[in-house]
Amino acid sequence: MTAPAIETRDLTRFYGKHRGVEALDLTVHGGEVFGFLGPNGAGKSTTIRLLLDLIRPTRGTARVLGLDCQGQGLEVRRLVGYLPGEYRFYENLDGRRMLEYLGHVGGQVDPAVVASLAERLGADLQRPIRTLSHGNKQKLAIVQAFMHETPLLILDEPTTGLDPLVQQAFFALVEEARAAGRTVLLSSHNLGEVERVCDRFASVRQGRLVGVETMADLRDRAVRLVSLTAGRPLDAGVFAALPGIDDLVVDGLTLHCTVQGPLQPLLAAAAPYEVVDILSREPNLEEFFLALYGQREVRHEG
Amino acid sequence: MKGSIYLKTLVDLRGSVIMWSLGIAFIGAVNVLFFPTIQQMEGLVAFLDSMPPVIKAMIGDVSAMVRLDGFLHVKLFDPLPLLLAIFGISHGASLLAGELEHKHVDLLLARPVHRWRVVLAKFLAVATGVAIIAVALAATVVVCARIIGDELPWSHLVLGTLNALPLSWLFTALALLGSSLVTQPRPAAFAAGAVVVAGYVLETLRMMSPALAGWRTVSLFAYQKAGYPLVGAPDIGAVGLLLAVTVVLVTAACVSWERRDLAA
Image 1 (cartoon, rainbow over the protein chains, first blue to last red):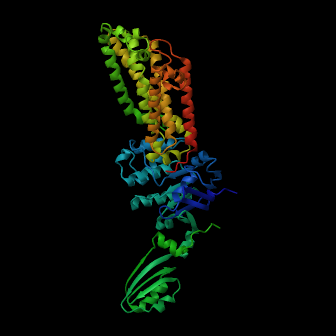
Image 2 (image 1 turned 180 degrees about the horizontal axis):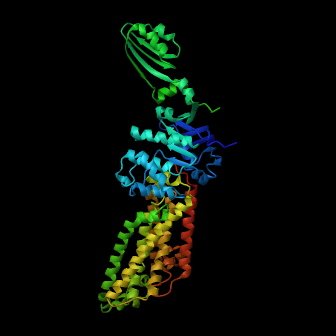
Image 3 (image 1 turned 90 degrees about the horizontal axis):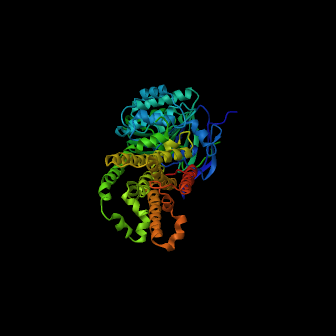
């Protein structure tokens, strides 16, 4: 049986009294794109740095492709392409020299692969890094993560600072990695980003695992925030009885609620009231957590 | 430079190495070019011979001051390790803590490379920088000695230059060890600098007071001063001991960095 791409058991890391991550049980299967979703400070980067043996666990274990992250850190790092959430390049180098340097520290890299990645992302390899914008530096960071063509990619907030076109190119790279059987752990605080590309995702909050879902589960349970304005006074009782409606507030001609599942029943019920305007949006991350999991904090993966 | 941490570090140091080399070469040139004037001073040896014993002890062979090798030993090569230590400490302290402070560390150490190799490569780069500066001084001395129509035996000059290196490397290694333990370069530099100052003060007091003669074994500068290779023979045992301590310190830095939890 093939070892999971990533497996953590009771993985815990405290910084003094502050909890980085606690009792994390996580399994990422080979060949999947796995989202690691949580707000800033939730413990995503701590978990990733534990996987790469940059920091050491307070307790618990972490394995990557069957290798112990602490005992076999060198072998683990040989198998991982990593994009840190927080980094700074050597500003005195240009992009090409920087990638050459990082590419050959403890390994080899195919210049053709680097050139191809740079071209697809529009990364400028000629200019000194100190003159590049944050977005252009992020392109280089993505190139250095992908250039070794490793079986596992760990990407911490990869789309930060990227414009929509480059984001599209980045997601294409992730799709290609999946098609090639590589595994991707994509850490993000952006729900839409995870929804767009991941097969499954884990939600973390305040250093604890909240849940692990497939994207199909998420879509089934998709929650939208709806605000509706009608031409005639609305009857709250009509809407309260609809399936999937929650947090309903009706005030004369306006209605606010969350809708889980399709919007059709709500629209049908509102039609007789002469709908003037309707606004529907995805919840932000905190609203998403509350809607999906309520106040429940921890759920160990089954 | 492809993938070589040693070469990358050395390239990063090039500006500093060039400036230091020019500075030390200038000092060397001034000393050599002014030596004929010093040499012609009447009664110099008698004047130096009238100095208190402690000063004479610091100078060494007073009669040698009217020879170029003796003069340069006192004026240049004896304090050379102290100067080189300033370069070594200022850069050694930032080798590892600087990676953390500047947030380069995740990109570098996420590569499949042993951390100890990073430490060793970076130390060797600074040690090379120290050696280049010392060689720049020696080359300047050769050229300027020819200008004034004097010359130094090559063997003595080479040995005098080499003799300055072990103590400088030792202090560089000390700063490196500090750098492996902290998150910012400054504390490592201060700690190593404090050891240098304490060692220099101890050595000075030791030479001034016979009561402190027993402290010789713990005075690092005493080992460097054990030989007078520019005017005599180096003390191989003392040099070996300084090198051994350097190896121990670099090894300790490797172990410390290898075990280090890199939480910011």
